[in-house]
Length: 394
Image (cartoon, rainbow, N blue to C red):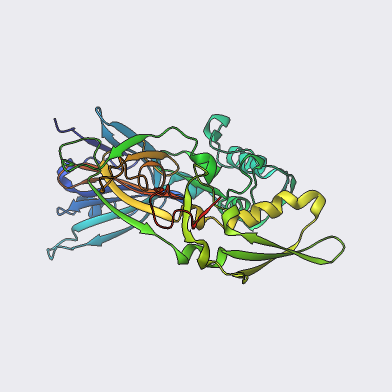
């Protein structure tokens, strides 16, 4: 039976009540690469009532609800960021298709500040979230503990910019080669966590490929695959990192790519042949002055951050039935049959994947779907593969 979807857009000042058929599209998006989630509401305003009466109220807060009793709901708050009017009707009044662009409500509270934090990175992040954004400790369950303590300066930066800078140098002893990611997702959850730790989460959905995809709720409705390959990894094959110690002497170390990707299973491989990596240095980086006694963790975090895209380089885009729990930062599981008869599973595509982008949307036919970009750092390779022994393993 088809789910009956609901959409509410509540505000103190605008009685925003349209039948679902009036919306061309309702889209809620997030990404691990974008700090704030966004929403786009496209409404057919042929009568010109919305445009004529309200047009645009910058920063107006809306409480959005999308979902169904059967499938669950997304509830989050946004502010009106910008607007446009498209497909305008040539009548005596202004009308057309109104496109409302919204952004997470806390974006409107973020201002440039000056200050300093003498603490670990994670404690500085928690302080900002509690003091400036009003989040509780219960809202910070996805903030992972970092190792090391130093002074962090906020010199005319917004909290968003400072937190992203802190993410670039965050280090966890428990996940010592994993870069961090930071973002709010569509559910309003705040993440500041190593990529490797995210894979420890329980999957919020399990999906499979099927010839009866339209009829089966757990089937992938559409998919595409992207492997970033050389664009993500060529410069990381062998990096020489320079740093200056307290005695003013420059020292360097050679880092190899095999030590900085974080597979779910140590048997998973980078699809890079060992023969493709020469003895030459592929990239040189200068980190600058490092106080070894107090900033070793900071240095490790900066180095790990260089490998962020490498840890997300094998990606798929999948379309599935509406799943409000499947948002950025969550894990989904894929179960894919093998195309060849000599193995039971398509091991390259099965298993855990990290959601790095999500879009929850309702179209003009009142059908809700979830589109995900999912990623992992390494691929399980079948032992029968001709390059099985030549691929790089951690």
